[in-house]
Length: 289
Ligand SMILES: Nc1ncnc2c1ncn2[C@@H]1O[C@H](COP(=O)(O)OP(=O)(O)OP(=O)(O)O)[C@@H](O)[C@H]1O
Ligand SMILES: [Mg+2]
Image (tube, rainbow, N blue to C red; front, side, top):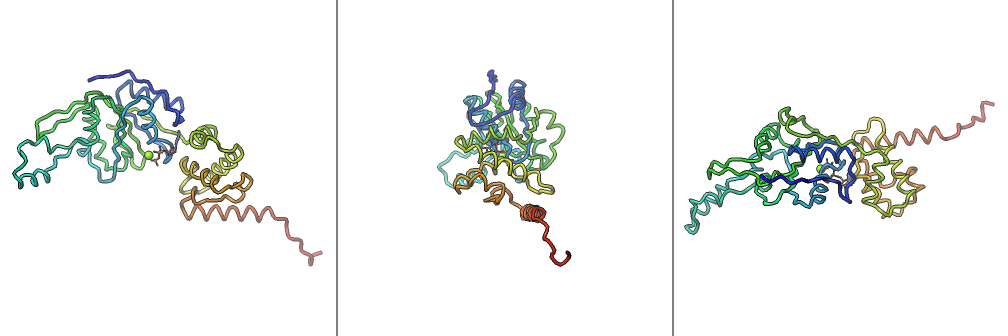
């Protein structure tokens, strides 16, 4: 198996902290999967894209759904096609190899060049899923009983696994990964991220929008905090809508881009009403002189 010396330094479209960069490079050096956790929108999926583009590698994405089984990532044996072919005599159905279709993991193993393999949202699948992949990810190989073949990775792929922590992952799986938690960006880091997406944004618009954004995230009892991607969309909406910076904190225009739950909207409006009532001068009572 080939192992190339790769060093990830980040890419121009992705802001990466030193800690995250180190975790990526440690995982690459150890040849272990990198497990990335973090709130939605913290750039977990985009990290894999950034690594692939920075290292000039192909990115293979395996999107995990609640119904995904580990086996599908290796290969599927298309028995239906074989049966169909057997009814028309023009195919050599004895050659089973042609009915073995590689999954995403299989593709990554068989690639001539080293690739980045993203196993995205592993926590969507059932608990058996990570356990079922342990051996293959460790050994970087799998056996196909139907053809009596062993597929061994030509180059160990760089494996990035993301999770929103909907479910806890099994200990045996965690032991085999390098782990990194992407903390939610602080305002300085967020300003850097925004610069990537909106390089020409007016400074005051950004400041006011960021203040409003972090105020919303810190609302007591908020059920769904707005994320980085929602802030990026909101800024776009503010620009397209021609909103002046002075209006942002006061009116919170296009709030539906940031808050997606009725309860959060209701809570915020209630809070704002109370604030304005407190700000109003007390009504003078002319009868009580
Ligand atoms: N560090 C970053 N640098 C540049 N853009 C970022 C960064 N973090 C997040 N973004 C932007 O935020 C958006 C969301 O990122 P991404 O889809 O990678 O998040 P995620 O953590 O995978 O979210 P989810 O858990 O919902 O899948 C992306 O479109 C990306 O443009
Ligand atoms: Mg994602």
